[in-house]
Length: 224
Image 1 (cartoon, rainbow, N blue to C red):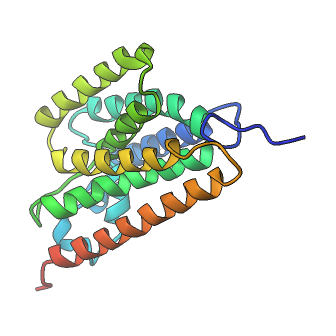
Image 2 (image 1 turned 120 degrees about the vertical axis):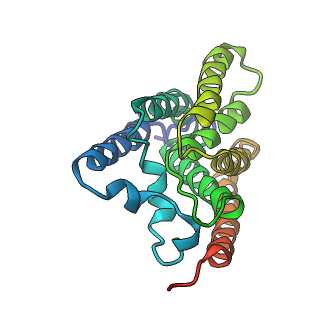
């Protein structure tokens, strides 16, 4: 029997487990921030020292402000909404790849545009990528516009009211997430769709890796 495929070529899964896993990891990281002293500072992205502590390029997107629980609540709500819309249509592999590209796109935006000693944390960059990807994947479907609008307004408000959320990360995540969605959704059905999609996503990943390397190197502050 042929394998069932989603709208955009991925293997069909009964539940959006990748979405649930991402939310669970964020919640576990948030609990660790409260339980273990120094966790927030260790996970936060500081462009000037990222070259010496490269894990910050990744961990910043799983840490949230401990000064406002609404920060993580709104981000997790957004990931749930967009994840349950995108993952069933793209398949687990493509969705995870899209999320990771959006995450590192947000990181790249911070590395390129934020001051070297600024501190940034939160899943907002990755969420911005999911938001734009949803617009790309569901373009023409007016049924989801109200949900998209609610999350967009909430995150714009949070961007200006909660410390350590940056427009730079939102911009980077949105751009890369949109490009990743185009790599997935614009490839027509056919025997070469899967390999074409994965090839395009691989090429985008390579370009993003180069941008991150250059930006991390150029932002590095000298060790005293």
